[in-house]
Image (cartoon, rainbow, N blue to C red):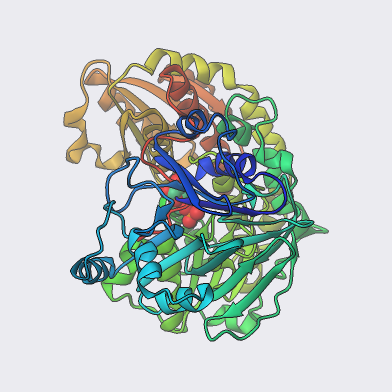
Length: 607
Ligand code: G6P
């Protein structure tokens, strides 16, 4: 969602601000803007639409003057995407400029109050109240004013503030929305995530809730809202810059699809030693593990789809009842969980607002939380009881691929680790599964090599209006992800159905030529799936199948993409690859903005 950058140094700020915003584009946005402190005034340039509009407006930054500035990419919440609603927002006299991520929940009351005092608002945003409050309460001290204004705000925020009267400072503060400080030589940076500043520095400080940072050229001071000084540790980011760049690929999504074997290797290799899964991250004793009577999985979007796969795997291998819940629904249904429930939270960003709040609700009810997270130091990683990182590296395309796959890999590791402890997996099966897991990356390479066939199928169907995905058991869980991938980047209407449910409604939607993608990877369900496929074919559907290569007869059932045969548990990791590639090629043929689909955001930090 929205992205923040800031620069204070000896160089012109414009080029860094534009470059940083470009690197944050992947988060999803619909307008962008910058504000520079020239020393005598604050100059704002902002524009609806892609960053290139802002670049043209500022002659690629050449028209931006000043060595101190803040910038923002906005994903609209309050007020439509427009020039005027774009950030930064100025106070009435132009003394303060503010960029903001998050939502000010009491903005309407604050706006009404300020309006009654004669202040005229220019935009429809919640953010503008912050700029106007700063001016309203200003008595000459910037820090005191910021602290006073924070006391008036309900909701979540990451803020960058500059003032005409303090030309050598940027103030940054956060509550619930991430914000980091980058440290350089006689220059310092502000950003909502590390990708924006990686090309400049790897040394960062993560701001915590209610910490206020004062950035100058010489250094960064961090204080509490009571003005007590806070000593913070610096952190060195291991990701290198190239990991967040396209490296010759046309789209980040394709690069990330191709990176999956390596990302899975990175995630599993350090955790398998001498044929045994070691998860030191889980601090629970064997006795505590045995005490759980239920597993509760919380996540959103594709991470939730991993949770649905995990439900099948955990129940089968651990013999414990599992509920996979959409985090946005979980909190509002008075869930029945307690200290006998193990909660597994899955999130690439570690900042998804609904997932974070659902996790807190589970913790309040006494549940132990293990999180599966990609972004080191993110809120969910920090607040969960144990965290197992996916080592996928930075994922830039909005539509997740390698994060999804590495999350699955962690699910397998957890199933094996816990299955061994609980004694629900016999040693021979355990050994065979670990062995297959170690060879999974090679098998994925094989599926990726077969991409020409999927490209051909995409070329046959990219003009369609609707597509249906069907499957049973884990294949059903996978069809949810295949359908989401396709609709989010190609804008083709698609739905996923449990194949057995077809007759209860969906089949009425099938007409001559409707494409149906059938996942048929599970040995014991092949017969049932073939019957369901015949039912849709009889009604005119054109069927593509994904099946294992030990069933060559599937060639005659539909247009079939084969994946190598592996044990049931690992099948989703192979079957998802053709689904990702299909979505990618269809979107590419339709000329869609693959890495930044309309209206979507990478990290959803509002509920
Ligand atoms: C957004 C992204 C999805 C992601 C979901 C959950 O909708 O576009 O790709 O699955 O958020 O995000 P998380 O960071 O919690 O995995």
